[in-house]
Image (cartoon, rainbow, N blue to C red; front, side, top):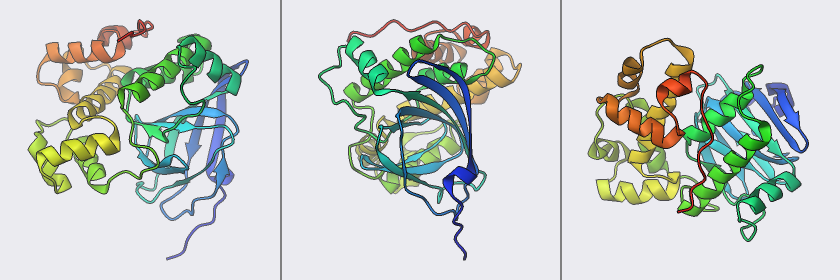
Length: 289
């Protein structure tokens, strides 16, 4: 079996969508295949990348994490990294990236009273956040004003700081547990079905209680939280890309009850499904708990 030596710049294309002082939002298309050899690279700025399609493994000093649709990849300025595609389907991946200067990140974190926290991202990635995905997708839609870039940046940084504080991130310097990955695969493949914890645990070869411990430690959220976020991401795509009635969107995304869907959507995104479809999202009030 031959191994490709395609350079990363030959496999990727970048397009800047908008920019401001110390900030840039861009889209990246990567067409690296399963057999393309990872190449050592370096982040020139701090970055927060939303994986919109595809799957790849991101290797940094903070650990290795398999990134899937909805996941966030975190990069530190001057930090070396490599991406491999051994778990991909061979069709590459699409991402939206928010790049920040050190001054912008420091200003945002100071405004959040997070100045005493480390000045670098201590995790390689974060599990799906429907709200952050919605904000970044709004920014990355060329021609759609969406949020002001600075306002959106503040909200994204706030969400990441909150996730770190709440423990919604895999442990530092640790590769994801293969059993947790198997459980995540099961959840994603069957997110629209009625799915019990026992069924997910069997797919991972664990007991239900052992799965709860392994999954949160490795993925960063509980299996139920992961299921809800996968369903919400699917609902967001249906609301954005189809004209299906909201009831049909709820059922197609895995909810059996419209009221529960509306509550979950509002809790995670801060607006109703109808408002999201109309592009009428509003910034969330900052949490103080």
